Length: 304
Image (tube, rainbow, N blue to C red):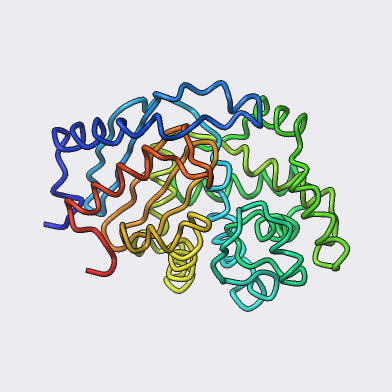
């Protein structure tokens, strides 16, 4: 029996309680006012196994915006539609040692975003999504994910209005620079698309279903593209702390400032968590603490 299949609700409950003791180390992000309304004590987990076994616990009815977790799937979408050679002509695959919204790093890299998991890379790829305008691009992308993964993502219009009202000056500066270097075809469409896809929202169950696309053969996604996305998640998905968690946990993971986290156990399944308190890097503290204890207790690391 594989590691995830050994999981019981009793063990899960104990490990969730242990992880929740870390909650006070995080803070709900309130730069976007609507995000700031989340309760820091909320915690939810949903785990999907290859055997079709699913196990969930906690505040699973909570809806939350995927925020940066969506970057994983916009990368997958473009790899599937346009191919790796094209996509990696626009963005690199190098880990970043600067914050996710760093303009300085983009300038030092002469306008070539270091990877798709930081904002400069994700804004660049948002400029390339198929569709005639931002809303059309978001609709087509969301429809593709829902059909392929069997999830029920939707655009949270209230969250989007809050994001637009308090547009990130860092993201605006990044987009301006990318436009100056000729890396964006349409600055405003790129930013609008990026903001909309970050407001695609769902429950932990939906996020776990998305994770399953990357966990094992499914007949929909190319095996090569799954491997590429998992590798980029492992090395870049938790920003400048990615290497630290690759050593401590050893799983491809992607976080978002909304509190979402997805971890992939290749060949076994996907772990999705929601915990709105994030650290200074932008990673959900209790969610990562939970995945860490789970990976250690069930020996889930991809490195054996």
